[in-house]
Length: 273
Image (cartoon, rainbow, N blue to C red; front, side, top):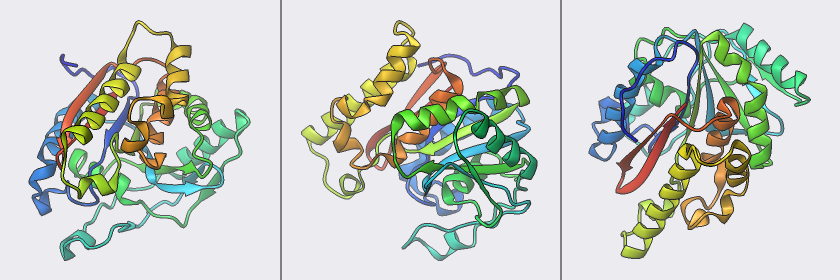
């Protein structure tokens, strides 16, 4: 989708494909992530200066929704086999203990058991994209885990419980990847695999942006995402897709913009509400 990016004056919701580990970071100069980096820099001005940033990361799963509540979280370099400099990256953003408690309270008020942890730091699903988007690291941040059940309806419900955060100018980011088949990234592309990548991306863009379908229909499509064409090729395991379900739950509306780009020869997408 094209069009001018504008700040809505309240909190925004963004699902992004965060790329491969630390490779999007400018210090590594990976050309296969140039389109993603350009997109993140383009999107950021439209998000204004949020009061805080809540990130749902594909790299954290717990038995129940769990929120980081530390005042100064450390970084978790949860990737392997990358250049030495990627393990000395700094992103000293403050935590948001009060907002963490409010987030837990919102979940509890909607009948969703939630936990706080002041011990866990920020994983690369947070600090890699935010180092590109907000390099000053001066906006309070917190992370929300996925739930180990990996049930799409449960993650939509979690998002619905947190919709009130938008009124406080909180930026909600689902940090995942719209295509996440690790074996496919390291295998030669064929006409068949490219077609499977394409058809799932087309389905996802239509599902998230089509204003001709009702919200009930959109929700059911996302809940039943495994029925989409080439779904299990694109997501052998769904942890990188489910941050999108949380984002949709928060927004409860079609995305106002979708962005298509290429990462490591695969088509991927991001969505802004």
